[in-house]
Image (cartoon, rainbow, N blue to C red; front, side, top):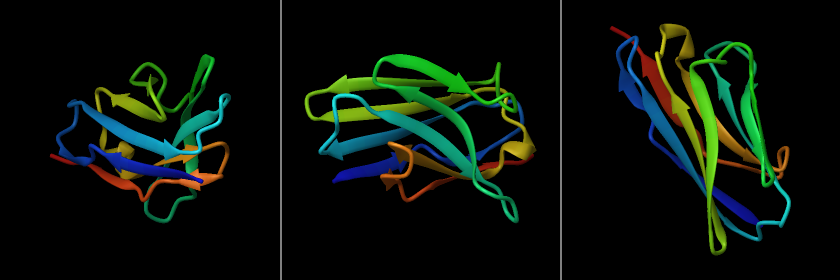
Length: 115
Protein backbone atom coordinates (compact mmCIF):
# COMPACT_ATOMS: atom_id res chain seq x y z
CA UNK A 1 0.00 0.00 0.00
CA UNK A 2 1.03 3.57 -0.66
CA UNK A 3 0.08 6.48 1.59
CA UNK A 4 -0.13 10.04 0.30
CA UNK A 5 -0.13 13.17 2.45
CA UNK A 6 -0.58 16.57 0.84
CA UNK A 7 0.33 19.98 2.18
CA UNK A 8 0.79 23.54 1.04
CA UNK A 9 -2.70 24.76 0.24
CA UNK A 10 -4.06 28.06 1.48
CA UNK A 11 -5.58 31.40 0.66
CA UNK A 12 -3.70 33.62 -1.76
CA UNK A 13 -4.42 36.67 -3.85
CA UNK A 14 -4.57 36.63 -7.66
CA UNK A 15 -1.11 36.65 -9.19
CA UNK A 16 0.57 35.00 -6.22
CA UNK A 17 2.24 31.59 -6.08
CA UNK A 18 1.89 28.43 -4.03
CA UNK A 19 3.76 25.16 -3.94
CA UNK A 20 1.88 22.01 -3.05
CA UNK A 21 3.66 18.94 -1.72
CA UNK A 22 2.60 15.32 -1.62
CA UNK A 23 4.63 12.88 0.40
CA UNK A 24 4.31 9.28 -0.75
CA UNK A 25 5.39 6.39 1.44
CA UNK A 26 4.88 2.66 1.60
CA UNK A 27 5.24 0.13 -1.21
CA UNK A 28 6.28 2.48 -3.99
CA UNK A 29 7.01 0.62 -7.18
CA UNK A 30 10.14 1.17 -9.25
CA UNK A 31 8.04 2.61 -12.04
CA UNK A 32 5.19 4.87 -11.04
CA UNK A 33 2.95 7.60 -12.31
CA UNK A 34 1.96 10.39 -9.96
CA UNK A 35 -0.35 13.23 -10.69
CA UNK A 36 -2.18 16.25 -9.38
CA UNK A 37 -5.93 16.55 -9.82
CA UNK A 38 -8.23 19.31 -8.75
CA UNK A 39 -11.93 19.60 -8.14
CA UNK A 40 -13.72 22.90 -8.01
CA UNK A 41 -17.22 23.20 -6.53
CA UNK A 42 -19.81 21.59 -8.80
CA UNK A 43 -17.11 20.44 -11.22
CA UNK A 44 -15.66 17.04 -11.94
CA UNK A 45 -12.20 16.15 -10.76
CA UNK A 46 -9.69 16.94 -13.49
CA UNK A 47 -6.10 15.95 -14.11
CA UNK A 48 -3.85 18.97 -14.30
CA UNK A 49 -0.35 17.50 -14.19
CA UNK A 50 1.41 14.17 -13.98
CA UNK A 51 4.89 12.76 -14.02
CA UNK A 52 6.44 9.32 -14.13
CA UNK A 53 9.42 7.92 -12.27
CA UNK A 54 11.35 8.40 -15.51
CA UNK A 55 10.36 12.06 -15.78
CA UNK A 56 8.10 12.86 -18.72
CA UNK A 57 5.98 15.61 -17.15
CA UNK A 58 2.51 16.36 -18.48
CA UNK A 59 0.82 19.71 -17.88
CA UNK A 60 -2.79 20.31 -18.87
CA UNK A 61 -3.45 23.14 -21.30
CA UNK A 62 -5.56 24.94 -18.71
CA UNK A 63 -2.50 25.55 -16.51
CA UNK A 64 0.38 25.27 -18.95
CA UNK A 65 2.89 28.04 -18.54
CA UNK A 66 1.82 28.68 -14.95
CA UNK A 67 2.09 25.30 -13.19
CA UNK A 68 5.01 22.92 -12.99
CA UNK A 69 5.29 19.40 -11.59
CA UNK A 70 8.37 17.74 -10.14
CA UNK A 71 9.45 14.99 -7.78
CA UNK A 72 12.14 14.41 -5.21
CA UNK A 73 13.09 10.79 -4.61
CA UNK A 74 14.59 9.62 -1.36
CA UNK A 75 14.98 6.22 0.21
CA UNK A 76 11.50 4.64 0.43
CA UNK A 77 9.72 7.96 -0.17
CA UNK A 78 8.78 10.17 -3.05
CA UNK A 79 7.71 13.77 -2.71
CA UNK A 80 5.59 15.20 -5.48
CA UNK A 81 5.43 18.95 -5.97
CA UNK A 82 3.13 21.27 -7.84
CA UNK A 83 4.49 24.78 -8.30
CA UNK A 84 1.63 27.12 -9.09
CA UNK A 85 2.42 30.61 -10.32
CA UNK A 86 0.26 33.55 -11.32
CA UNK A 87 -2.75 32.01 -9.62
CA UNK A 88 -6.22 33.10 -10.68
CA UNK A 89 -9.63 32.77 -9.01
CA UNK A 90 -10.51 29.93 -11.39
CA UNK A 91 -7.70 27.90 -9.82
CA UNK A 92 -9.69 27.72 -6.60
CA UNK A 93 -10.29 24.04 -5.89
CA UNK A 94 -9.39 21.09 -3.74
CA UNK A 95 -6.14 19.66 -5.04
CA UNK A 96 -5.44 15.94 -4.77
CA UNK A 97 -2.36 13.91 -5.48
CA UNK A 98 -2.69 10.49 -6.99
CA UNK A 99 -0.47 7.45 -7.29
CA UNK A 100 -0.56 5.03 -10.20
CA UNK A 101 -3.84 6.16 -11.75
CA UNK A 102 -6.00 5.81 -8.66
CA UNK A 103 -4.19 3.18 -6.66
CA UNK A 104 -3.92 5.77 -3.90
CA UNK A 105 -5.29 9.25 -3.32
CA UNK A 106 -4.29 11.96 -0.91
CA UNK A 107 -6.80 13.61 1.39
CA UNK A 108 -6.82 16.84 -0.61
CA UNK A 109 -5.60 20.33 0.14
CA UNK A 110 -7.67 23.45 -0.42
CA UNK A 111 -6.40 26.28 -2.59
CA UNK A 112 -8.41 29.49 -2.58
CA UNK A 113 -7.48 32.39 -4.82
CA UNK A 114 -9.32 35.55 -3.92
CA UNK A 115 -8.71 39.23 -3.45
